Length: 156
Image (cartoon, rainbow, N blue to C red):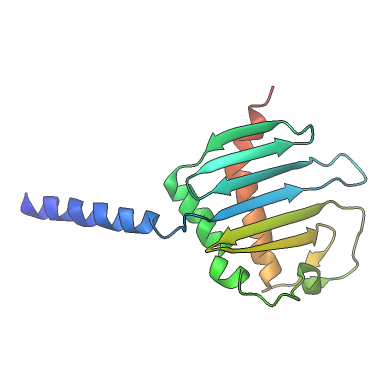
């Protein structure tokens, strides 16, 4: 019995410490811009407290919430320690291979944490080279979409 109580205390302490790793001012956002076709246009932001704010192409705003484990997942993928410390001259397009197709939409990913802010703009017509930071930005954008898709699916 004492062992299970001790285990519960350790688990509760570990979970509470794990949730505190996200700075209060952390925010990650994803914006999809127009293209020369039928591309979805929207912006979605996730705050440290789990608030999800989405704005569609008609400037309608929708709110939802993420649970702490999903916030922690996005925080780890946003990797502020790496992305906020990048050289100011870093451009995702520097990590592209092959022909650059300009009729694709852009993806704008913003990361804010610990009083710092950084925005990355990527034309989706570029093919990223293997092992680059660009692949990590793409994974972050895909995960933001995956975790917040239900907001757009519930629209009238």
